[in-house]
Image (cartoon, rainbow, N blue to C red; front, side, top):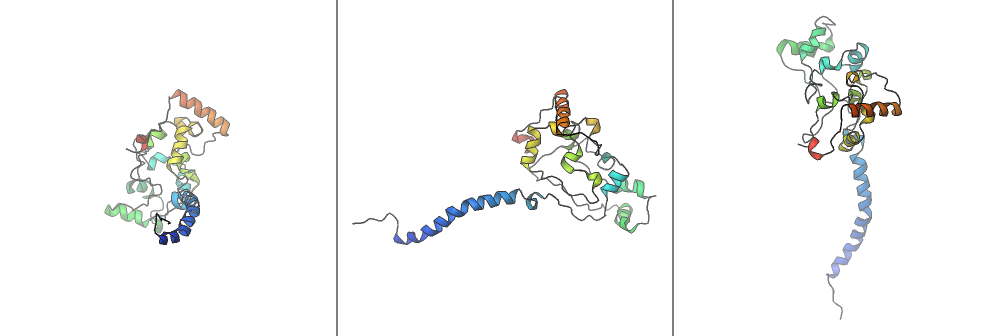
Length: 218
């Protein structure tokens, strides 16, 4: 006499289980691919701004130092977004009637800030300190690319956890003399020369980036 551990109707589930077993690896591969795709990491993200500000003109052609606008980048965790007064320091006399600058003039007159749209935005559970990086020789270009060549700023790097950890584990290629951090067009040589320079800077300043979870997740 036969004894069944499961009811006979469960036999109908066997094909579905087989499909699930075959589909699971494909699902896993798809999720990993999607997780690292530009659609997810926002690489290339370039939101339309309320004022068409050109970093190529300001930081590139005119050579304005990053710190003139982002004046806390070497002193604080956040790189400040410039107030309207900073813009008007120049534009009160340069193209004062430009229609493209109408939102800036309006902001200056009524005190309402220009609603710039953030391009690089880490999750709330991630802590990043700009000053800690730039004061140790990590140039703006390592995270933001050559903004001095960007008519419209876009997200240059994935800023993913893996991307950050790779730099913390192997910082030499991304270090330069702290005095050269804001020289975006500096020729730092090939990878061999960069690695050697970075090694010397790392050893000289005792740079030892932490990979402990609490460094970025506080």
